[in-house]
Length: 246
Image (cartoon, one colour):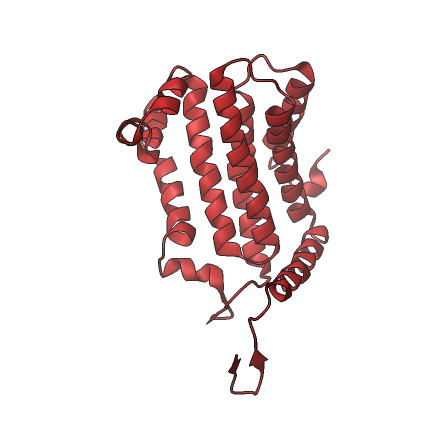
């Protein structure tokens, strides 16, 4: 226990006290979202993306070893989305953005397998040296850039930005743990950070959910219908301000 200059005593003796504080902040975050149509819309997209991943993982019966492997990636994708949401709503923005980067990386791998399905088995059985040689994140980004003719290397720039802000220790990353110019120990609610995270998650989790579902071309009609509905929602999501959407 330590005493601050103003006499305030701070104790970190019980984890359940920390959890109670996190739940209080979660309520504050939800009120901010509920009172902002755009933020509410973004959270809705994230929830629907999670539903797509959940259904293709639980409701689709894998027909091949490759499909079973993809469903394991689906579990990783869903867990990253769920834990990132929990962290962001409770005010742990930097670690929430770490999950967004993981979703980005998993999404790139799914996109690679979408057009190179013969590589799934190679990836599944590869030892560490071969996996690093063929499937390291930079190798996947390079392969996707070459496939798409992206000479600007936008994937690398986006990956590097999230790495610097969240996953790697950097001075720029402190902006996610600072409020009013002062570093904050523990979680806190900051609307600009919450808004940025919701936006990033829509950009990362939405397309990744679609890439995941596309790994199962012979899925049940009910799943394909849900995917079509979500895909339309994702495409139209930012064509007009919320108030102008039909």
